[in-house]
Length: 203
Image (tube, rainbow, N blue to C red; front, side):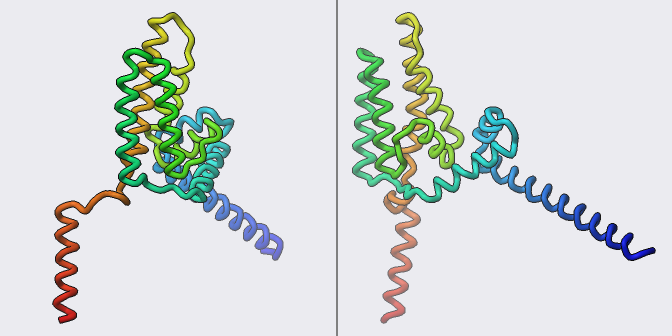
C-alpha cells in the first residue's frame, strides 16, 4: 500500500482511540458525580439543557465548596442551637408563621458559623448540595412551602410541612460533629493504652 493510505489508517486509529478514551472518561465522570450527588444529580440533570451542562454545574459546585472553610460546630454552639430549635418547635403551636421564619434564621445562623456563605438562597442550596445531597431538596421544599398562599388551613399545613423539611436539614447541619465529639469508650481505652505503652518505652 502507498504511504498515504498508511497515514489515513493511522489517523483513523488515533481518532477511534481518542473517542473511546473520551467516552470512558465521560462515563467515569458521570459515575463519580452520580455517586457523590445522588438524587441531586438527577434533579440537576432534569433542570439542565444537557448532561454536559448539568455535570459542569455540579463540578463547579464542588470546586467552590472545596475553597470554603467548612468546620464542625463547637459543642457549646451545638447545644445552644438545639435549645433554640426546641423553642422554635414550641413556638409553632401559637405562631406558626413566626416559627417558620425563626427556623429559617436558625439554619442561616448554623450555616454561617460552620463557614457557608449565606448571602443568596440558591447559592446556599448549591453549596449545601455538595455536603448534603440527600437533604438539600428538603431545604428547597421548606422554603417553597413557607411562601405558599392559601386559606388559613392550607397555609397552616404548608407551614407545618415546611417546619419538617427545615428540621431535616437542621439536624444534619448540627449533628455533623465528628471532629468535635468526646472520645468514646473504645477510643478512650485505645488512647490510654497508647499512652501507657509510651510510658513503658520511655522507662
